Length: 511
Image (cartoon, rainbow, N blue to C red; front, top):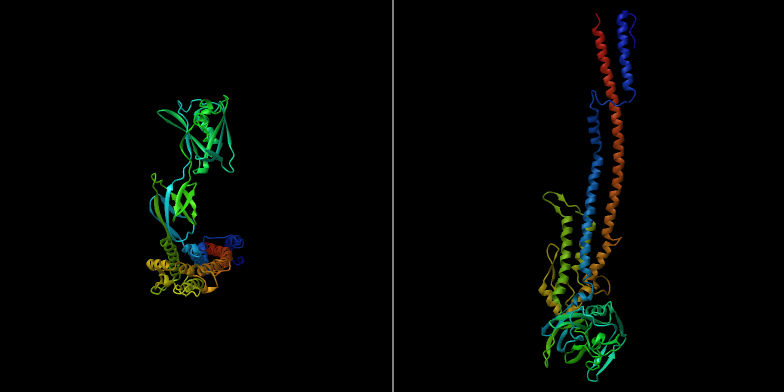
């Protein structure tokens, strides 16, 4: 814009100069695209408010995603509760869970414990003698450091018959040679060498006021675990009471002629009877006499007498009831969890995280349907849970009447076992525990109901995340564009204000 020549030259020159300056500022500020946030428009605040308004759809989607995340967490809780229930149910799918036995002992000399599945019954146990290991001791010497002699000791396990005065080597047992030299020729050194040889004999040094003795003991009890000890003495004499020979112990020899240790305890088997049947054992722990039952012969009778005890094997009803109670508690925990996750508060119109979720509802319905049905493959009188004292409460949980269950188990343990463990047929032909185990396995399988719900929720979250990422990118781009646009508008307004001010100043100088 230029001023007409009709205006006086000094005024024309002044106006042209001012307008040229304004036009120059406007051009440099408004057409370069440089952001101007300071001016008539608060660009940052305006753009922030616009972006906040445009962010509402994304915020709503983020809230929806949070809700689905909560569903995934709730599914995880249900999965954990189902796994706990399955553990309890699996323990009840085997017959041994309902045939647990306990052994009760009255009398003396015997202990008993169930180690398998013994037949129920009562057993009269009479103990005549306990099994014991052979012990032999040397004559005393000054102390454990006393030198005895050198040579070779030979230990052999076997059985000694005192009546026939014979020693028979143990079948499959070879003699063990032990070298004694200057490094181990003391009483203590010889004991250590015997213990290191693994010959089935243990050695110790016992000291009293008389001095120190070498005491040898069979590692195992029983008549077949006696031992002999022969010596090849470096002094050339193998049976006398000097040098290494003083440790010789040939049970068939005479004292001082190869039988130089003193026999302090003979090897012997336990002698006992079960219901009048005489038996022997090399050990006081008897595991083979009664199938599934271990007897511990604990006390030797006085000479000429016996110890008697009565062992009664019966169903351990308390143990079985405890297993069933664990199942009831696990089921109740699942029911309460499902009710909590699907509840709806009509007073506050508030839904829970899985309210109306059909997968959860179907899981609860399927399990309760199994437990509330009658099994067709059971024994008469044992086809409903109520027959054994398990009842449904109004809230869907179960209650176990322990007395009723114990009575049913005592009356017919096989029928009670069958109503839980039976695997014959399909559906309600099977036992309750078997049906529940199969149903839970299906629910938790990769293609199961719960897994399907979890996968669908995860897929929904993935899709939402993709949308949120795209929406955020769009908002970022929109924010950049708005800042640029309003900054340019700000620059134009500033330029206009400058023009107005310059023109006003120029006009104010006119006469």
